[in-house]
Image 1: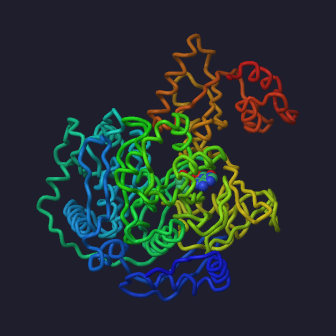
Image 2: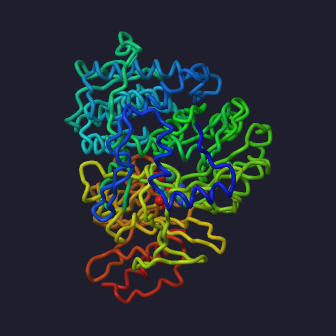
Image 3: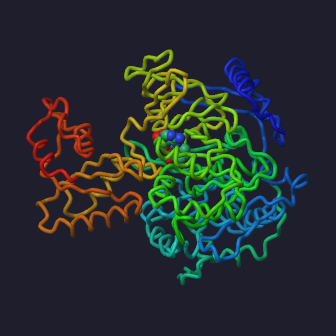
Length: 632
Ligand code: WT7
């Protein structure tokens, strides 16, 4: 099974068919899978109300397509290679047959703990094979997984548990991150003080960090599975049944739970994985993301397993024990396809080429980039030093909401251009619009990036609040999905993503809402108000710059800054800590009370010369005073 594009001519033909006969195009893809019952209607859609359904009437279970289907042909092939944080510790591998068994056992364990079809299961785990096992175990029984990145704080975990009304949390005693061990169970305990829907916690023993087990609520994973059978029939799911919820930040309010459904997501994860990476049987594929992000969902777990690939999972960090770790792992496991984020490339580049030279990296043939715009210098360094000038680079643009890759070169097929995500995949109908929603036609144009036709992997709603979803993505421009990104289409029709045009910032590939960080800062008892903007950062892509008004100008500014960082860590997690904090007496506001972030962004960028029109400000003098106190 492999309707894979193999040349630019095939790409052109596939693209054309996907536009002219989308239903036939996607039905042919969907026929490649195992269904309990084929669908009645391939697509129905309405963007203005936002109602999209793919493969309606179809019934299936995604885990049969990830696992059972492969048992006959590749049961003994390695499905997952796990590389531990500590390079001297033992590597674990799971064949497709072993993974199938582990998933069935874990599925039975979930059932035994009272989890039923449709229940939400929160997963708060380090990067261990059990994270993949439990995701698939949920899918096996029709439970909806909601993974929370293990770097998020207790407060963030509570917010997500409460919003999704999770019944159970799957966690571990701790997580190793480089030289540190982080007590995960402890964070869960704190979160559960204010998460009333959770009645059960399953704890994986991993770091051997001492934990307190709450009688009647907490149970060890190894004990819970010990009596479970390794046979578990897959629950029959409707094509549009929810598969998972994943929280992501927007420009307003708390993070929203992006909902993906079964069949469309499955087709999309598989189709994009195959075509973008051009995975060949036997290839070792490594995506360095965490399963707590969409990249981990689609390109560590679902995409590779649906394709019968061997996927490597790495527990550690790029700089432990030293900045050569990625390259060491590539040589150790003879990785052929390597997928990482620009921020990792830039930080390793900054450590010096001597960390790369000891390794041959000769197994590599394809390199991927994801999560943020890749600058030309990093692209070139990746190409020369990691790819040794012989690997294809696929710069893949997509979002949590899109479920999988939307714009990307196809490895070894699409001619690349540094910093360009190049062309949309067949099935992706893009449109660039100006601020008023007018289409920008032709080439050499720049505007807001929209999608005008549904694709199977798109989000279906945001959990518990469909209207918010509609407002967020479909209300800015009529009949279009608005991505929130600015984008340029060059003379050749190639796409280059410029970055967010809304109040979302992208820090080291992590998406954050400025409002979310402001709300966290405002939790400090002496903070009256704050305004957060992004600024260009050489390693992180964007850094966080916070302008903060306190009840009095703090006497001990450094101490106050440390307290604020602490509050943000507690409210969101260490990834949201501002890089710069400037205490100010006032913020530039319009007469209607709106903060003019454009001005704050310019000051944060160090561009204080030309701040544009400030005449609509309530008090233009605050700008001078902020400029004078600006941090360099
Ligand atoms: C935002 C989505 C895609 C999975 C990981 C991030 C930015 C993503 C690229 C890229 C330029 C990119 C966009 C997008 N982004 N990939 N290749 N080039 N920008 O998913 O957390 O949902 O963030 O990341 O701004 O909107 P996410």
